[in-house]
Structures are given as structure tokens and as C-alpha cells.
Length: 294
Ligand code: RIB
Image (cartoon, rainbow, N blue to C red; front, side):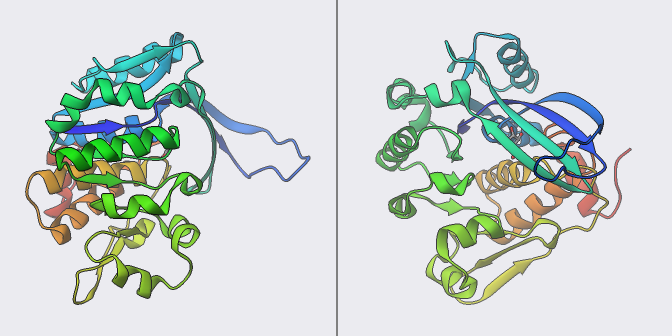
């Protein structure tokens, strides 16, 4: 069983011909709301592949919160430990243009998740084969979750986004950390080869369509990505993380798991919205075998 501790947001997605400059007003092409949040996205990515998943997080007492709960329940994710708070459900304003995006998150209810809530689900954590964390919830809550995972010997996969919320002291309590290139530079500086060697089989840098890099203790490893036509890259990193957790829990080697996660992420970017394109297991294996399911 995989437990995800993290954020749930309603994504307010605008497709546009070009991003506005400061002080400029532009017309967008399309608008849609769709379930998101790095925590919920990673939970759905793992569940859709076949993992048993429990989601820990907070939503508001509002229609966005209801929609996000339903989206998780439809994927058979255990939502019994989701908390409804007095703060509004978190939102993410996502501007999509030319296969790229810009995101502003207003955490709202996500910042109501406290260490006491994590303590209350201690048993769930200790029964987990892996815990996935991201950084859209309060730092003290992340620190407390890491403490409980360490005590229970549960491996943690931490996706350091947004990177500004990361605490370097956490490195020794994390089994896997998965920054993208920008987050990696923010956290560790620009000497990528040196930093990869410092954290063998732990630091996995995601490179978008170029795949991912890590150091296996002896050699630098580059696992290539799968080239595809991207419609919306939102949720690609989340799919990578959910799929990586799925594959590692299933007993795949790190090399196999990173390849599997790359393929899963490539399928996600072909659809608009963070969760809509997340693949099933058979879709991932079909692409690995060289054909795509209809
Ligand atoms: O990683 C993509 C996610 O980041 C979006 O779904 C948005 O909600 C933000 O949390």
C-alpha cells in the first residue's frame, strides 16, 4: 500500500496563444476546471496503475472539495483520512501555452494539515510500503511525517516541489528525491555531476521529455524519455512520481522503475489537465511494447 501525504487543488486552467507581459491583458482561448494538486495527482497516478493508495490531506467545505474527494474515490483511493477544514479548497491557476505552463498555487485548506493529523494516521503510515510527499503542505507537517516514516522504517519518495519549502536536513530520511532540473539547481547548485554522485540511487533528476538522470554508485545513468507530442505538461512530474512509487513497490529495479515512470509521464502529456491523461498499466506496457492502445 502506498500512502500519499500532500495537496489537493482545483486547477483553473487557461489555454492561451501567448503569456501576458507585466501590465498586459490578453484573451485566452479556453478555460476549464480540473482536479489537481501534486499530492492528489501522484495518488491518482499510482492508483490508476494498480496500487492500493491512501490519501492524507485537507480540502475545504465547498464544491471544489467535494469534486476532489469524488475524483479520488472514483480511482478507488482510500479517502477516509481526508480532512474537511474551514479554509477554502486549494486552487492552482494554470496558464498553458505552447506545450509549456505557468502555475500559481493558493494553498488554502492544504495549509491546515498539521502534525497532529499525521500522528492520527500513524498506523496507516506504518502499514505502508512507501510514503510519497511533496512540498505544498506546511513544513512542520512534512517534518513530522518524515519522523514517523523513519521510526516505522517506511521508505519515502519526496518530490521537492515547490523547492523553496525543502529543508536540507531531510535528505538523510528520504529514500528517493525527484527534483526537475530547475528544482535541482535551486536545492543543490549547478554542479549536477558532483551532486548526483553525492546521492547515489537517491537523487533522480527529471528532465522532461529527455527522461531522467541518477548515479548508480558506480556510473552516471541517463534513462531516456519517450518523445511524444505534448498538449499539456501539467501533471507529468506527478505521473512520474506516482509511477515510480508503483514500480518500486512492485519490486522493479531503479533503472526499470525510472524507465517505466518516463513512459507513464509521456502518456500524461498527451491530454489537457493534470489527471485526465494519466495511464493505466496496460497503456504503459502497450507503449513499451511499441504500440499505443486506442
Ligand atoms: O504538478 C501539477 C500540479 O501542481 C497541479 O495540478 C497544480 O494543482 C499544482 O499543485
